[in-house]
Length: 160
Image 1 (tube, rainbow, N blue to C red):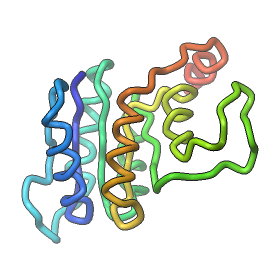
Image 2 (cartoon, one colour; image 1 turned 90 degrees about the horizontal axis):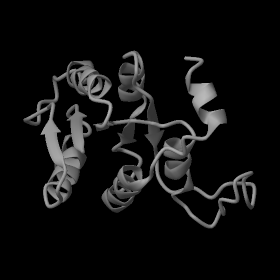
Image 3 (cartoon, helix red, strand yellow; image 1 turned 120 degrees about the vertical axis):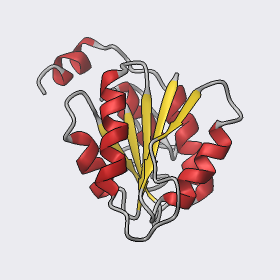
Image 4 (cartoon, one colour; image 1 turned 45 degrees about the horizontal axis):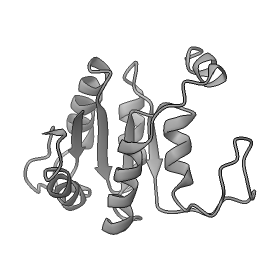
């Protein structure tokens, strides 16, 4: 799999930590920038590059990093074919079990649902809100979780 990374200055150090961890694996890692820490950079310059590459390579994934992760996801989601979710850290859902039997005991259940139900191909991280450890765990889950290919999820995705 090809994994595209992008960040602005606020997400730079978290991107670099993820890049270092992923470089130990077998996936191809492509860093779309920022390549240096520059507080005057603008996240759309880097995020849009990664999003366009993800959209053109259907077997790829993208990981983007910023201060909040929200602006980065907004930029990515403007690209046709991109489905970018935001991750802020482990959660405990209010309901004990969802309709497919997923237990709320899994604090990373949101990552599974983003992939299984929405076929998210990019994940945005708010570096000011999530730890490096939780980010690395979320990245592992995101890359390992397949889309369900369930008819109802395909039907919904075809509507946008």
